[in-house]
Image 1: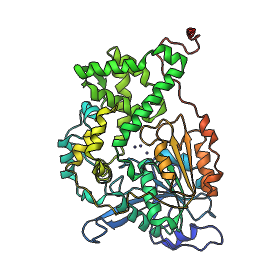
Image 2 (image 1 turned 30 degrees about the vertical axis):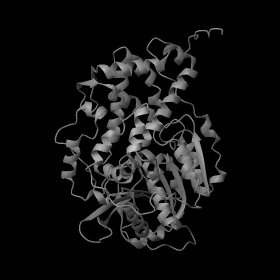
Image 3 (image 1 turned 90 degrees about the vertical axis):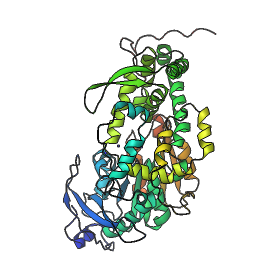
Image 4 (image 1 turned 120 degrees about the vertical axis):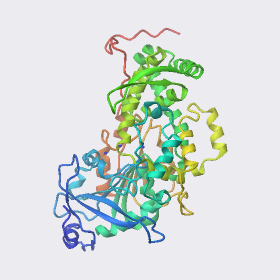
Length: 493
């Protein structure tokens, strides 16, 4: 799982519907604002809710809302609502990144960004360590017990009250306050879980749903990363074998990985890499878990995955920088907009709570083993867990038109999760981009497909064949290896 509402409600309501439509009654008062990286003037508000929605008493928190109004005065009454990933990312700060996706839709529809409770500027459950985290921790133990306990002590919040279903209740209240009768939901990664839960609870107010990288509540994060990451790694290795130049440059890559892993398990090695946060160089110890984490993260993005053979070959020769340095840029981008406390509140209550001893025993026989899971198991042992509705893990059923997008080489939300979600959605269409990783919407023809789907509200009419033609990036080669040089001849068998 990264980035002009009128001063009176009556004015907003009048502008929110096309000719001849009955104007919904808006009660939220919004004001002009600017969103970083977004040219158009937006309209923003803070909506106050009880942190404890069941008790309707105690601490009140403010939910941050931003709307980029439709450019045409006579426009459609149903906006596009963006749900961010993570969990823990704020939607408003991602506006500059995703607005190009909705540029044409914005002619006739408002685009709405709501920072989910605990994220962005909505009473964020952010954690600031008393000193900068060492680079070693980013690879080996991203959730050290001391820092997690410190985070828990810092929070002016009840972590049990930041689970997905409570956020859904906030969102429904905001829908009413903005005066929208129907919504077009777009969610990416964890945002798809939010969209599905909203569809379950308030489906009568949903016109369309677009899910990019389905992450249903049933997937048991981060346990599923082990299975899905291994599949993505195998596909990367197969793709290298299928490219003659990659295969000849990095022969026996699987054997290289096995030998490197065995070497590091016996004797960790030290290397010096540059910290992207400070620019200074820092020495870290590379052990087996650091290697596994360093191999997993680049699989998220096809362009980064194309660097893996080069990085692994260099690591085998004793230079770990080409493998580990791209990881740091990736981790830095995510951490800038991730509320760690909210991340734990969701993962611990909704995912880790369902991980069994048998699940953990199965990890012993997997490629990535415990490297991607144990940090969370330790942290969630003492992180407070919220309550969930009895039907939270039941499949979501609906006949609302739904478009599901999956990246074929995604290590986090691959097509198998999209298939599972589609089974109980009567009007769903699941499209796979076979050579893309985590996140499809901004690539190739995907923006056009999403635009067409939301305009027509007809998933069956979407022709996703163009996604098949988005190529996998060429694998990186060492300096001096020319792509246009004649590849070595295949030996006759």
